[in-house]
Amino acid sequence: MRTTLTTLLLVLLCCSARAAGTLEVYFIDVEGGQATLIVSPTGESMLVDTGWPDAKGRDAERIVSAARLAGVKQIDYLVVTHYHMDHVGGVPQLAERIPIRTFVDHGPSVEHGAEADLLVAAYQSVRDNGKHLLAKPGEMIQIRGIKVQIVTAAGEEISSPLPGAGAPNPLCAGAKRKEPDPSENAQSVGMLITYGKFRMIDLGDLTWNKELGLACPDNKIGTIDLYLSTHHGLDQSSAPPLVHALHPLVAIMNNGARKGGSVEAWQTMHSSPGLEDIWQLHFALEAGKANNAPDDFIANLEEHCAGNWIKVAAEPDGHFTVTNSRNGKTKTYQPAAQ
Image (cartoon, rainbow, N blue to C red; front, side, top):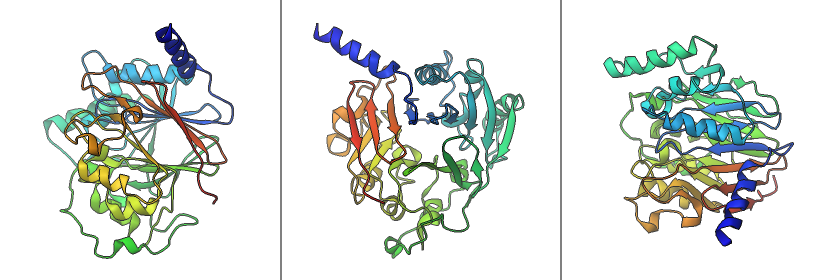
């Protein structure tokens, strides 16, 4: 009887219609890549990346499943943060399953070679069937009901602070830079998504030095409520002067069982002032219990898993609820008065 009641609860939780006036964000498990589905209160959709290619379309199927739960029948905007297999590889398979209207990317790839060129060509062959927008720092993606502002693209960042931001960042004193990153990661399209008082940031796989460009010497972003771990929680990213200056209330880590979730990046988030919780798509096997969230806050505990997702439902007054589809765990967060 208990199993039946638990199953019924999860069905009601996962399949309930999107509440009017609510922003929904599904962090879809694509095994260490990215696929984040954002559904505005008006029902318009934006998908950030599509995960990996797979012979059976694993990641595309998981995205479509989340879209069905959200009542989404088409992807209005697909943002490709950068041209790596775990972010853009699933585009052709997804396009076979659900219409994609507008494609947003940073422009030409900086990586070349047989595999890189084939990856981009496969994406472009799909992109040619829809509209194309070139991401430029400071510009908006026009989605009704929310604000989506591009803060990084093609190796550049916004030239001036966002409204309300721009305070000197004392965390920059003595901040160390890493070796320059010539890869596609440093070209990532990064976005600030705002709904009323609620603010979340997604910087793709932006790497350390580029993160410092947003944070030093002044904090160009300001504070946020929800932080999607940059670069899956790898230590090539998650520069403390940025993460701590953002002052997130909650962090979501889109790691895999054996990708991302590094001890250094996890501890940077964990020690960020004001952070209440970290939620993870996977238990990071190599990090150990001390550098993982409590089990209730992890969507997938096993390496070979069902692909459970994490959902955020945000209201315009700034409060938001996080739900773990594996166990029905929910928690509501109330941001400090702004």
